[in-house]
Length: 178
Image (cartoon, rainbow, N blue to C red; front, side, top):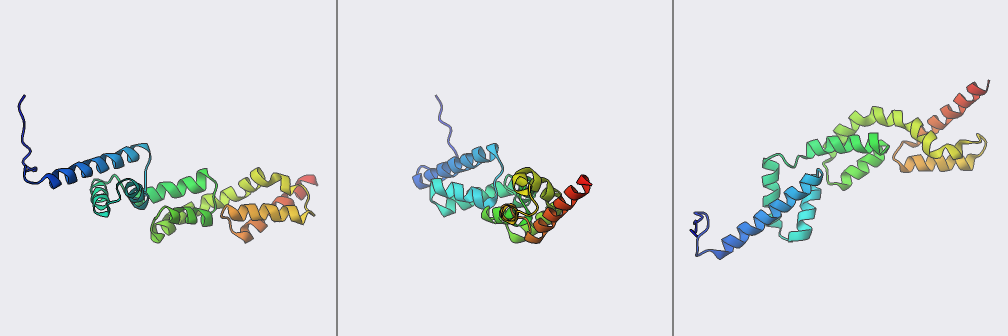
């Protein structure tokens, strides 16, 4: 068996060997996590910090991932905004909160949520009827209507827009009955 010497590693510097090994392990862990799903820079950095507790190491790993475009907050923000609004049915306000929790920059959030505004407006009446139909049985039952409004506001929809959607819903019911 022949031993191949690595020119980067010297026998005098065992600390360098440990450092390179930890870097490789952390980098492989980050790649493993990214293989399953996409992460924002902040979220992946936090995950690495949970395991390695070394800011310098985690920053170096993240820099390498950014350099090879494995972590891209712009791409992540675009996909995450579409997911929150189109798939989860959140309103713009709730989507903004969720994206801020992921550590995304406000300008990216604003840019990509502006693109999702049309979908949020389309979702409003559909989700209102789908989730809160039981509260919209009687037009005179204001307590039930307020429950529907509160639920939609928790989903991140604008209070006035929800009120208008409920009014439109009851107006549409009246025209169908006639």
